[in-house]
Length: 146
Ligand SMILES: [Fe+2]
Ligand SMILES: [Fe+2]
Image (tube, rainbow, N blue to C red; front, side, top):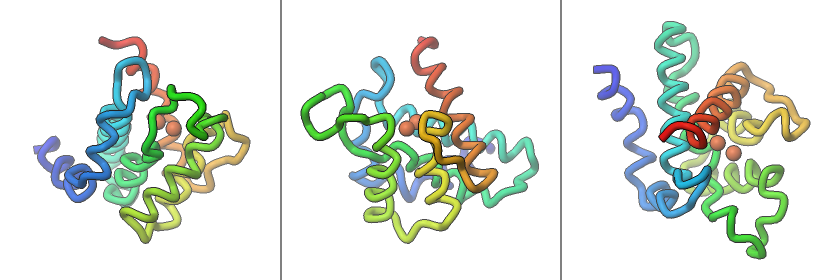
């Protein structure tokens, strides 16, 4: 049931062509940005269930789904992707606003500040910290779990 609810939440985004295009971009090792983003969204969703839905679950899951919606393979250098680590939150936000906007303030914060502490700008919302935390957990699992 839990998984079905999650699928219901993410369907409006993950079934779009733009979102599906992330399957072709390598993110961490051999894991795609699509795979990584779904994992972060699911971890965040499970967190919300545990905390008895203290936050707007749809909003935080949407932010998690879109946090890496930058739409390129950052391994391909020389295509204007220099300093990817610092710049991709802004690219992701612009793309997300264009394709799934208008985004809420919380969704915007989640996307723009998920690279904290690499970027010095702190998240302004608790949801921003939560997604930033689970992004790190998922990234670790991407690299080290088969
Ligand atoms: Fe990212
Ligand atoms: Fe990420």
